[in-house]
Image 1 (cartoon, rainbow, N blue to C red):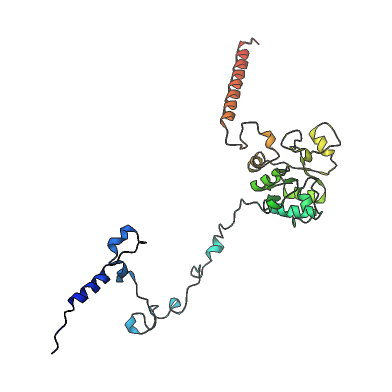
Image 2 (image 1 turned 135 degrees about the horizontal axis):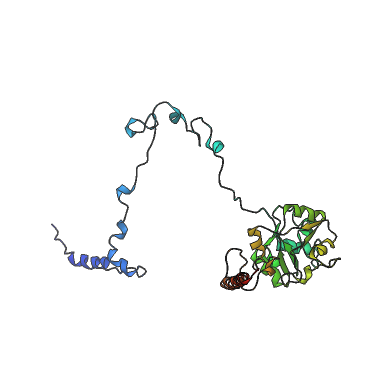
Length: 312
């Protein structure tokens, strides 16, 4: 029998070479103590749920009728949605509620890029005020909705012409883009009937009783020369139109067109330091009202004292 060879010395260095491995330098330091278990991580068996296979025999527990039972509507099909047992449906007795904003105003939108394209094509005159009448007549908008026209800022970089626009409402970006070129945006109030009269040429597009040309709120390009002088009603009548453009009376509309931020045509009626809101008051407004109240009380007290000293 051949003698055994001592392989202990050969096996030792090979084993030391395989064991002496350095940890990857890309791993964070806090993961080094857990290198021995990172490769064996797995979810516990209870984290998985066995898939239910229906109709595959009685041993599955869901065979034959698949858990639906025998006979009946629920075994043969499904109950229609919103079924109330054959009686009058809920949407009939109670009606639909929601999904529609009752306070939203339907408006026709026009963007700055379309206005510039219409000016380039000669369909709009940039030297004259651009109102809803010109926008509808040039087909820049296809019809005017009851809420009027709103100016939007799509394609504001394409606008390169100075324009003066009178619309129902305007976005802040559109106002900034027009005024950056030296133009002006003025928002004013329109009613559905007024829009029809304006398009038919029976009403001025923007002049009304509260349209104050002497204020700084109205740009010079929107000034008109009335044929008659005297009272404001006479000046409006001197324009030669059969109908007079109305002004807002509701609080919501008044607050919008009194605001400087929206470039409303009634913003000149708001005193410096006052709020365009008819409800919320500034500190200066409260102080002025308190001063007026003191003067009123003093006047009433004076009249009362005079009345008490009379003999007859």
